[in-house]
Image (cartoon, rainbow, N blue to C red; front, side, top):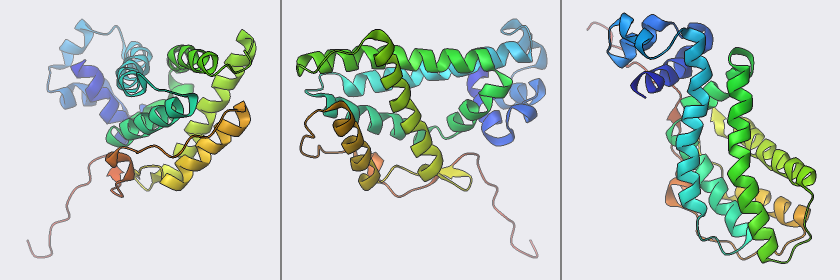
Length: 216
């Protein structure tokens, strides 16, 4: 995982095009040859990277949505945990957005793995609230719409310069209203949102270097 984490940060700063084996090895503080003990090639690294990072994020989201009492609570907890994680790991946005070109197989696998537990949780929540059941194809479409909405909310409202900022409460509430009205469920009273999601701090996608003062 050390090399994968190093690669993620290199891509966050330089993109896939600038993610050389030498840079990854240097970032991980291992010998160049050590890379080939774990990966067959640079492309092998790219193909394993996004699914591995996605699995870590899914574990965090899964814990956050556990024991949700309603579909809207499930969505709020999931959205908050998802965006909190991305804000704390800003390089994941670039790793994901460029993967469609540089690691298309990993890109598809990543979204398929995101959809599986989401689909299961959504089906269970809708059944608990006696909501009309969707067919498998319809539920797949709903999940795609919701994942797409989250992705473009992140891209449109959270990417700021070289950093990511949390989604505002107003936009979070707008998303929840969209979900409630679209699926025909009751919009519960606003639930407490984790403090990290309300912070105004913008976390950089890549570390910035301090400029030396003139004359030093």
